[in-house]
Length: 313
Image (cartoon, rainbow, N blue to C red; front, side, top):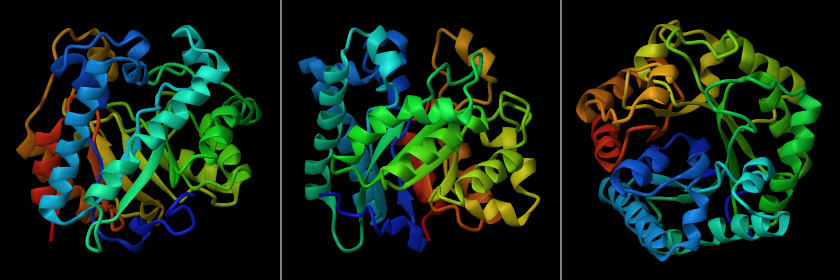
């Protein structure tokens, strides 16, 4: 039974961390080949399981050290039927992976959680298509139909919430939110932004969030930005407009490069962890509810600790 599904503790405003760039860590630091940028197949590999263990213990250790909460994110970003089929998984095989990915996180909560540090289990949802390029855009109804299958399965696990990452157009976000609402699981929607601070479709973040809110009767628990560097959207969030209160989480890239440049890069751009931490601290002054902090491409435990040190009160 899910522990926090009806009462997410991060909504109270205390500081929470998440992990960093899982895929880039496994690819560049751990040396795994990741077809379709998917990490969940590493559950089938003993070395992969050991890598996951090292990964999660590092981040939980940081949260424990600074006495802050933590969002344990299941490694299911690519675990939807289209991607699973490309990787050779059946629907049954996909369901087994979804259960395994959530169950894998429970011992970390049992080991590290205490009264000062709550550990929330989240299951990652990824876009149906490429996270950087919305080449085939679904309607909201199509997106709801596509994502309902794995969301229904995740709703039967001990996951407390869903987090949809790297969304690049609003209709898919709406479909995911509708499916989450049907299965009564809290959902967080995370949009990715280009260097101009807009979604890859050209839609503004403000407009995208408002469109989701209007269509879903304000169902998402909160919103997030991921896979973009703070320099790409700082001017937008510095405006102090009321809608910015809906943004509670950030998982930024270490690199200032565009998505197109990152796609072509053969080496990992790790940026500057201390600089990134200071940028997060500044963003918290602009975003009054920003309290769930992590990283995306190029970040690792060094960046997350730097972010925590810069932001912890």
